[in-house]
Length: 149
Image (tube, rainbow, N blue to C red; front, side, top):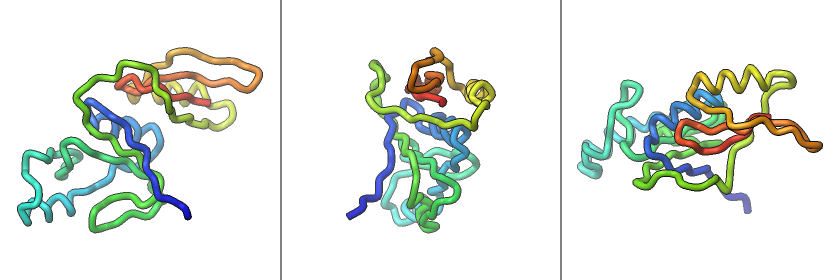
């Protein structure tokens, strides 16, 4: 049996994180506005659980990004393939990640890719050169570590 999965990342500002990672990965921020509008019309969700983002209604505390080539449910806007969900949590990040994302740049393009990511809000922490490879350790705008190879 194969399981469907998504990566969930805790965030102080899920919409800012989704925008960063959509830009970093070339993903799309999911558009859940049709589902939200229906739930609001049915009285199944309160208006205060939503915000306006990208000119449309979105959940205040949850937002996902999805790969643009993967299928999605047009009724809900939810991706059915590769996706990352950002959920608001009250506590700040305090320790090193136990799980992180590795981004694989094209051969010879790592410096340009790290510079591009910095313009999106990432911070380069250090360059690593080991017998097994070379990469740059970076953090996203909320301090989550990731590597660019």
